[in-house]
Image (cartoon, rainbow, N blue to C red):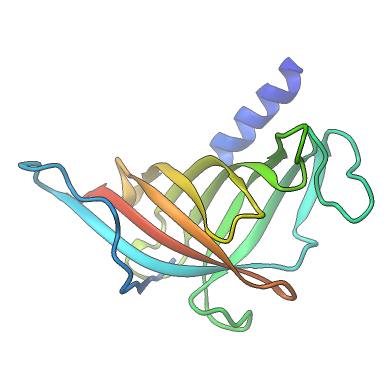
Length: 183
């Protein structure tokens, strides 16, 4: 168990992502603290494209038939993040991370996400956002916290709301609201 946790920690700290952004007209529910300078609110939408072959199971039991996860099933994955829902649209970033089934009662839906979005285009190219949290895939809108970042997203905090756009191909909308330091 200690070896698995150590491996997950190392994987969590190694993965990195990059992107050019499309602004969102949906309001964010966060604001910079009063009187604090050089804090910026960024609000944008990107789309996760998943071909279901992007992940590799690295630990845990095999999932039951017609399921992706069992309690303890652990995957490592890298999937493209695009500007628009169409899988052929411009790739803006990569989503890389570790995904673990963490519920004994509903393991196929309750997943712990330890992921990073690494931007590869635009003004945030070379920067990353770190997302760490649990969400239930059966919920229509899922929220996970942004717990940090690098580059232009240094000192980040915020949240990501995700929604399924289509099942095949598997496309998920990422509405990102993030406060970060701007030197």
